[in-house]
Amino acid sequence: MSTPGASTGAADQAGASTGAADQWPLWEVFVRAGRGLSHVHVGSLHAPDAELAVRNARDLYTRRGEGVSIWVVPADAVTTSDPDAKGAFFESPAGKNYRHAVYYTKSEGVKHL
Amino acid sequence: MTRPTPDAHGEVSVDRLALAEELAGTGSASGPGEGARIAPPETAEYALRLGDDALVLAQRLGDWITRAPELEEDVALGNIALDLIGHARSLLHYAGSATGRSEDELAYWRDEPEWRNAWLFEQPNGDFACTIARQLLASCYWFELNTALSASTDPILAAVGAKAVKEVDYHRDHAAQWTLRLAGGTEESRRRMIQGVADVWPYLDELFEDDELVTRLAADGVAVLPSSLRAGTEAAIAQVFAEAELEPPAGRTAFTASGGGRRGKHTEHLGPLLAELQVLARQHPGASW
Image (cartoon, rainbow over all chains, first blue to last red; front, side, top):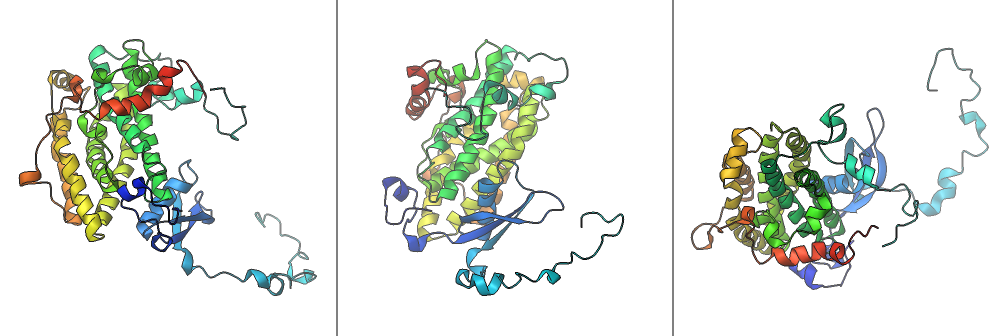
């Protein structure tokens, strides 16, 4: 999030290298909003290491009381599905209603189903 | 200076009422049926000292926004500055109650000799390491101060202390984390960290100076005796230094600044800081935005 190549007096003073190669690594941030809920991906940030990533996440994503727990994960540890293979990956369930368990009647007294 | 349309920033709206609710020690905390508490004159002077410390450092930290090593650190320092403005608002609001002045009047319309902050807080930011060194000293001191202040016999000061101590705990952690990384990073970062500590160290001593006013207030359990905070503050700093393999300056680089901020005597750095803080309010009195 620094400006690559821009070398201002202030940045030099700060002892910061603003070259892209020296930029802090990227982290993905997950925040749990409350007890009983799961951690949800909220965004990403740069930090020099995991401990500071948690602290940066606290400042960037929970300063208005959004969370009770934070996870950070190195962005390069996340393996993603191929966006170009969306068809092969995600369209196959179409027209296969039998995969949805909609033919059962719910037993009495069962909540949250 | 025109007021923006009500929904220009979504749900964010800050009006006078909402601002008043943020003040520690007012509202529900002060008990049912209790009117706004007026500070006794000496307590007001004490609150002014503590409030000026927080406001001056908040103004200094604001300078880092867009200039920190990374955007994330802009936000971290900005957040800390906002916490400190919160403390300053509560304290100056209370201090002003003794003389019928608002927190804004105290912030914008006092000249240099009327400010009561200690010298540490008005020192220039220097480089990032110097700012972190100042943060470490300031937040270790404030943690001890606010812990003790939360037991004050004055209900407003006790409420401010109780609220501030949790925030300052985080500030202390932030400063400690960066002290460790800078001291244990590269040769250059370590050199800067050592220099930063040497630059701010002379101003630590003033924080622990007692005078007649604070001694009288402390006897009544209103104020915290500054000298009583020395051991805890220095122990907390020493703990970080031990892990970072740093040492307090000794020999040629060690000296103690004379201080005098509590009496309105300041270093040459406060004037320009106040000029920037106050110029808008003074050029456009009563402006709102």
